Length: 187
Image 1 (cartoon, helix red, strand yellow):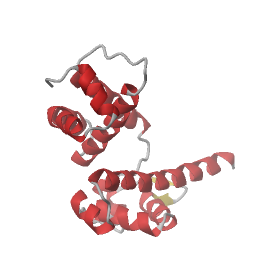
Image 2: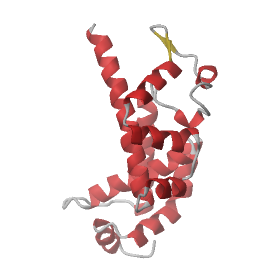
Image 3: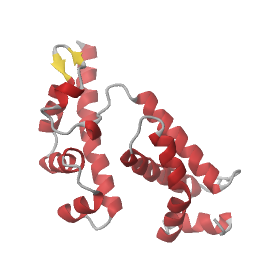
């Protein structure tokens, strides 16, 4: 990137789309290779890049932040750390990307816990989230609609908003799962 770190810092503080686009162009291929070679999908790589940018912008906004490596090296390091953390935290995480239909999930997941299959648990979680999130999750993962289609269908003004909403909906499912796991530990 030809801009000075000061110019990049100032542009990122204001979330300048040109600079973010340039960082994406310069770094996404490396980050997606990291994800794809470590049990992830291209959608995971896109999510990871977005999460990486959130971390980077947060760090850059801190007054005492000092960048000691190139911006590209720093982005890759953030991505690598976030992805490794996700892999470590991956116990029975929702792998909706691989499910074609909820009913066929039994053939994909044979994980049982207290006589309840993963698919049955997933169905239960999906029934408890908001209708909006259920539709969004279904469109993203089961119908495999692209982000542009989702953005248009749900009226999101930007791609970023659509991705953020997807994360919020997945978070609803994770919270339900965590709540269920906590209640089992108490009993």
